[in-house]
Length: 309
Image (cartoon, rainbow, N blue to C red; front, side, top):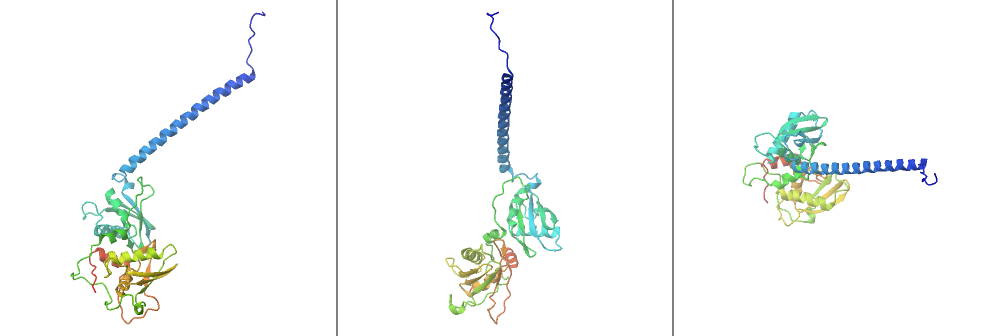
């Protein structure tokens, strides 16, 4: 018996080690599978994202690609038909309709409290409908954007004001339409005695608006809408005194100051600017000026004519 080797029985500790080893192996396989499955999901997600970004504006079959959200609809007693007709006519006059301009691009409007959803006949018109963002409607500036369920990327686009200012479709001066109210040009430019008449008060500003930004915005309005008679290399805005919630703007000429009053209510950095004469201003002459909505409607209809000095 002494010649037979003695077999050592497995102890409890040996069985435990084997069990832990098998358990670790299964855990490693499980983690490996999860990592592989996770990589596959990420790859599929990127593939779907690339496909979606490529085709998002060509899929007319999906409602979310033909629908826009419209906020700030605060007018009382406003109807869905009024909103639809107004936006259809605005797109037609602004040259935003893809295809036959006689066919309304907006086919349905679902109006709720202070907001609505508008449905377009195709995704191309829906893309152009984004330019309606900032359009004045019944005393408010509409906020137009994509709904939350929109599958495509949110691309930058022009606002309504930027689009209208870029068109520059004024009619010739020899047209018979009514003229803009202008004060006769018989004063000296930058005469200190006329500063009182060349100054405009602007309310509803904020601290985010800088004097440079205000100056560039107002001067571009006057130049792009041909409401100034100075040369293109001159700025119709001489200086701005900005004080938080209000500012005072000094214009180069009396005409520029008078024409600037027609921009009362113009939107700038999500604020509707209030333009008026300073409280100390006194004049025996009475002129009737447009507000921004009236000026924009007259300009986009091709009925705006400016007198030359």
